[in-house]
Image (cartoon, rainbow, N blue to C red; front, side, top):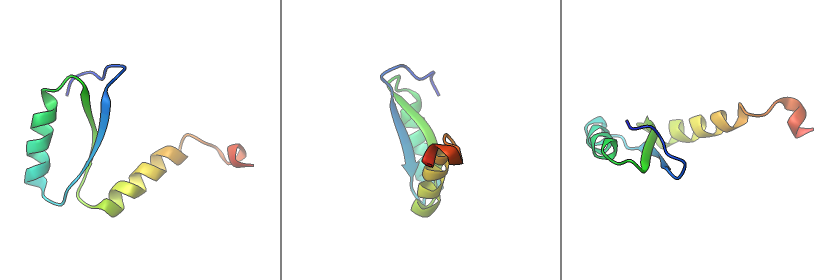
Length: 64
């Protein structure tokens, strides 16, 4: 993947077909303004990962 630029579109790819995900990954690899940041096979795992990555930025004191 290319290095992300300041105005890069960040994409989380969710599809249950690994072959399709590979094709999309190859297509995005040539795009300078698209950064494929993660891939998941199920929506449940994608959502869990998304929220977990957001919560890791905060400590318990930030919510008090």
